[in-house]
Length: 66
Image 1 (cartoon, helix red, strand yellow):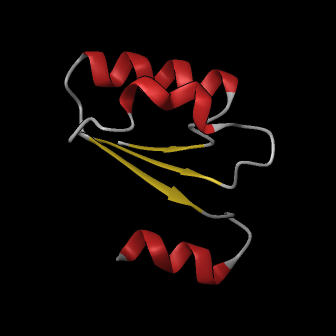
Image 2 (cartoon, rainbow, N blue to C red):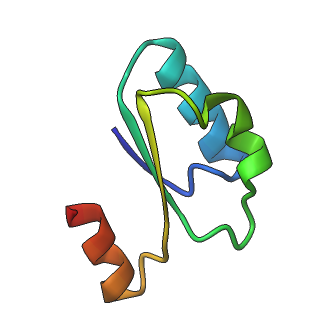
């Protein structure tokens, strides 16, 4: 599951629910308003991937393809 803005308040709660259900989650966030502190409990979870980037930046979107 791709969660854009996953380090924000609402996104981090969604990530929490998904990880608890053992889903594989990819977070894509530019950390403008979100923070890694919101997802800290899950950062070492093998089912979580975090990518820092902005949806408006095509170069950052390439990171998702990789």
